[in-house]
Amino acid sequence: ALFREMLGQWEAMANEFGGNMMKSGEFTRLMHGANAANMKLKEARTDMMERALDAANMPTKAEVADLSARLHRIEATVDRIEAMMAAQAGVSVIPERPKPKRTRKPPAAKAPSTKAAG
Image (cartoon, rainbow, N blue to C red; front, side, top):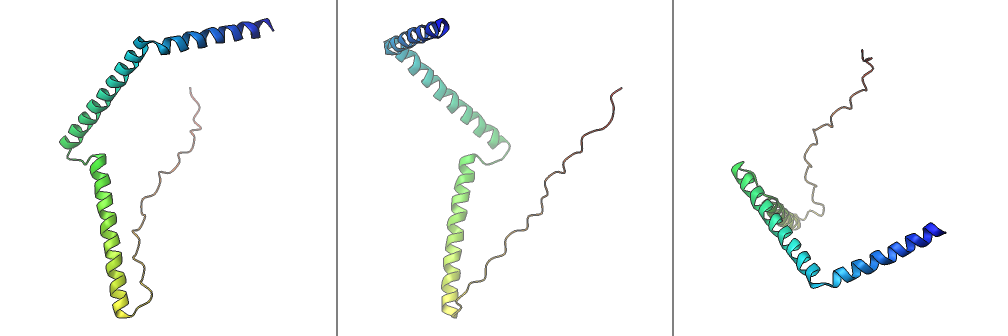
């Protein structure tokens, strides 16, 4: 019971101290500065990654997302053209395009070694 009471008092004092500290203008300035530094760090990391990918002649995440969106629009256009052609030919069912083959296999699980150390 004594321990619970001491813990409750400590908790109340910590909450009061934290609440008062967060209300101060200094804490607000400190948090603003930390957030600004974090944003600059993220911007610098993004810039460094873009330069590294450019040097390796690889696309950035944004470029891959753009290509994916463009490919989706192209596929939608092809689907509409196929539907129009099927309607003109009087075909009610459009044959489904073949899917690419999935030939990659996951790596085989290695059996645990039974060799004795020694």
